[in-house]
Image (cartoon, rainbow, N blue to C red; front, side, top):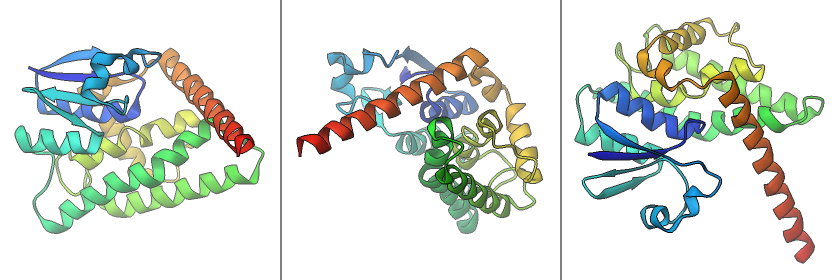
Length: 224
């Protein structure tokens, strides 16, 4: 049976969790606490870079969420989460990459950046640009690139619905708001949703990690 290594609070791991549920793939869960579990020798044998998500399927380990999603789509093709028409496929891939490279980092920075600084305004402007791009890409379809759920919906759907919880509301993007609400009604999204306490702990963890990163960078500069 496929083994899935994850943590409920990780939005990146949630991509894979959603795909497993939407495809109806049976799997064994291994929940890592992320305080020390990811540095244990048995997990480092699977992923020497000590991060999640990871799957192990018939002894084959797959790292990185996008690679895992592609693997699941290839090995477990029903139901299909990738369209085959060239423009639709390109739309799905664009949404996946724009979410990963443009939206996710900015959304996370809403958690720890000072709202009174000009940088915060720039962050919100960038998110606005992404959401307008998403609105255009969605068009009149219920899902990105298709009449059915796609991997783009899974990847973007782990971030966009969180934005109102971070103070960035979707009222200016009615098509995206409707899309987000459709996703939140799906059993897979309801099963993987974070409680208020879990979301608060996720934000706390982000702030701690950012402080540690800044401290390490400061020490590195002093050492140089």
